[in-house]
Image 1 (cartoon, rainbow, N blue to C red):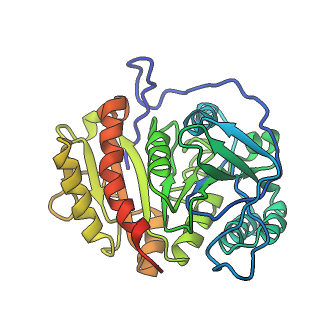
Image 2: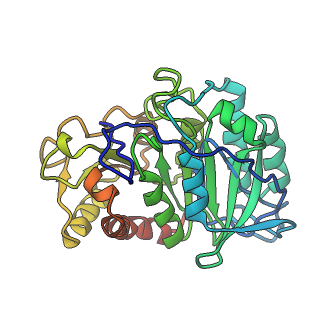
Amino acid sequence: MRRSGVPWWGALPDMMLKSGTPHALRVARSVLPPVAALVLALGTLSGCSHPSDPARPPTAVEHRATATETVDLRQRVTDFTDRITQAGTYRVPAERDRRAVADGVRVLLGGDRAGALRALSKAGYTVRTLVDRVGARQVAEVADATADGEARRGWGRVYVDLRGPARWQVQVPHPTADQRTEQLGVGLLRGTPGGVMVLAGAHRNAAGDAADVAHRRDSVFAAVSDALADRGLPALQVHGFADSSLPGQDVVVSTGKGDAALPSARRLAGALRARELRACEVWERYCGPLEGRTNVEGDHAAAADVPFLHVEHSRRVRMDDGLVAQAVGALTEVVGEWSARRP
């Protein structure tokens, strides 16, 4: 995918740095209700669960909050991504750390909060419970246990909607570089039960290309995304492109290397057109260097025969709140179908 990153406050060149004022994140231990939407943002992962009730199905995470924080989820995620810059640091995680976070998320979704905390703590991660002011939804945040660790390592976060069992995932691999793509993820998480959001924690250009988690297998982002795919969760990976990269198009819809998501891709293209957004359909025509054929998460999904959609959004769409809402509405038609499916 081609990068674009024009800050919302002006017509600055693509890929300009954004900066925010770092601030300490609260570390609050908590327990979670049934896990429905897990938003995985890989620089600040947070989520929570509680030892499972034997009478409950293994896909439901019981959550009794001992300490919760009421937040505006959109603002919390925006504050996080505003601190991500090209000048930021990133450390390639060791295999044991990737495994620990992925195992923690997997165990959390299986209903064992205590086991999830044990696994996550091996990598310096924890889980927190948040209540979103919009809709009063409980969300699990899986993240680095300390603000300092998050800033130094840049491994990202995971957010889990707790309205029910996890059914689908949205991946945000290039925050800041692909300006405001995290807003698409938050919109989906708020609107459709059963979602898990995986959010990268560093700029794609940090540490050379080491932080480009869409094209590196050795990341926490890929490890978590793959673990979710192994559970059968279909994925929607959101990106952004400069308007000049594909003039006359608003969105590029691709199924990556596989074709398991082709019915969903066609539905998405139709939903976009119904909202007067111009969609380039990769299975119908050449869409330039924006087709998402080389993303490692898509490779894994194809091998697992799990639906994967790679969706690029123009700067014109991403910088306009109204068009973002239209794009989220179209994407929601797809994840809504995924959410309604039963294992």
